[in-house]
Image (cartoon, rainbow, N blue to C red; front, side, top):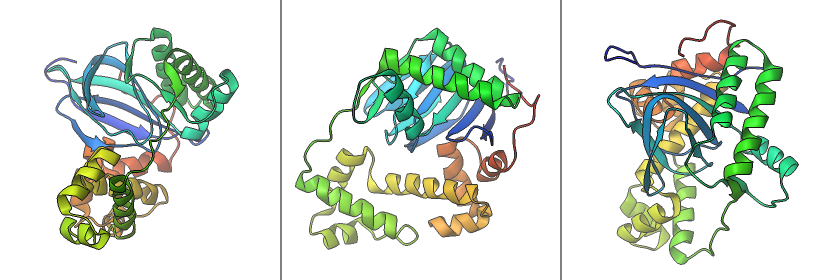
Length: 285
C-alpha cells in the first residue's frame, strides 16, 4: 500500500454460490457517487480507511473493521487516508439475510444492521474467509462462512428495521414521481413538467423526493439506470446496447456512471459474472 500502489478491483460471482456478489478492491483516488444497493453490503476493511456518507452521517471504517449498509440506503465511499483503502465486500441478497435471521432470532418483520461501522474481528475474518474459499472454488466453505458471518453480525449489530411512517402528501408525490421516472427512464420529463403533472411545485417535489429517497430525482435516476444496467449485463446484453436501453447517451456515459457506483466498468462486471472464478486468481492481500 505504498505511494505507487495501483487501484485494482474485481466484482464477481461464484456460480455455485447464488445470492451473493463479491468485490475485492484497492482504491486510492476512487470516489463512489451517492447510490443504493438492492442487497446488503458487508465490507471487511483490510488496509487503510474508507470514509462514507451513510444517510446523513459521515463515518469511517478502518483496517479490521466492517462497513455495513442495508438495502436501499443511500451512501457514498472514498479514501479516508491518502493511501486509500483495500477491502473484501460481500453483497448478500435480502432473502439470504432474512433466512439466517429466522434461524437465529425471534424477530419478525424486516431485519437489518443497526450500525454502519462495527468492530467485530471474528466476523471480519469470516468475510475474508468467504472470499478466499470462493477464490479456491470451494462453494461449500464459502456458503458456510457467509452464513456464519451474517449470523454473527445479526447477533451483535442486528435488529428490526424501523416501521415506515404513514405517507404524507409529499411522500405520495415522491412515490408517484419515482414510478414515472422508472417508466420513462430513457426519456424522463423535466422536474418542472414532472411536478406539473403531479399537481405540485418543482421545489416541493424536489424536497419531498430527497426526504423520501435520500437523494434528488436526477441522482436517483442515475442510480436506477445503473441498477437496470446491471440486470441487463447479467443477462448477457452487450454494454453498448445496455447504455441505450437504460437512457445513457452512449457507452462512455454508461461506463463513467457505472464505475462511479459499482466500482468496476460494465465490461469487467459482465466478465466477472460470465465465468467461474479460477482457483489461484487472488491478487490482493
